[in-house]
Image (tube, rainbow, N blue to C red):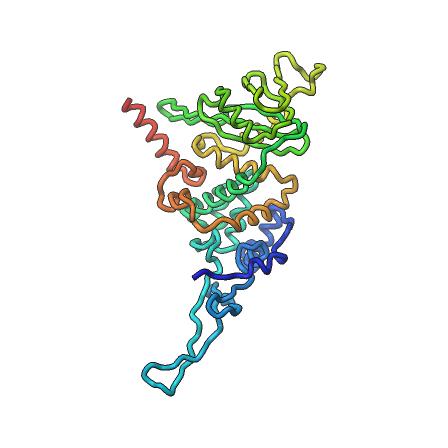
Length: 364
């Protein structure tokens, strides 16, 4: 039986926008479950009230069990004694975490907030989280996969950039490779990115080896992420053919155009700065198959100029994520490797990945 809660009636009570920076979050939530629960309820993660679907009455919240219980009771006729009745209480209960991304998690609320607060920032330290929050390696894996999924959910809702004469810079760069100590093994990934000059909205797409020179592939990426009517600036070496798109296209030849040139307005400095910033946030040796997850995290925290709003927007998006419902998180819980699995949370999977590649090469 489905639980009816008053999310809709309390929609006006849900936080529209709040500001809390990185250090304020640590000061406010560290070892403070009361503040964490209030934050969750205020952002729609946990319900503020629950209505029993059987009795249509408001449930009471029992803090010790973290459960909502129906207080209603009614008289029931005893089977063996016709003239006697007994009280029967409604046995409806609902966990506070039911239907949320913390449903199957035993981690304390304040730890989950501080974990997310650390990961969604530009620089974060996995060892620091593990030591100070006292989390196991498996918990780090589960929580880490969840953060990446929330970031991807947010990214999937973003609209294409540009349009109506908006200037957009695009470029392709080499991002990730993998090596083995004994045999040099490389699995390359390239990154195709674009950014607006005025509004600073941006997109990034991971490309496989060879795709970065595929004109048709780059055109498909442009059509999906850039609106018609934009003014495009790209590197002449990218070999972009945008004749089918309704936009102006200027190719930048860095061997001819300099900062003092009359064509100084035609450049790709902004997108190159964006690509450098992304490279600074990822560690060397990451699994190239997981590049898109790192992109989602980077675009999330870099899209908000006011970093005090990061935590708010993150948990607003987390409302739509159910507990361990995706294939990727189920795979991570089972200890298996998945193509979207963020290896940053388990170095052992990186070693296994390299060994598998080496075995396949030796067989050939």
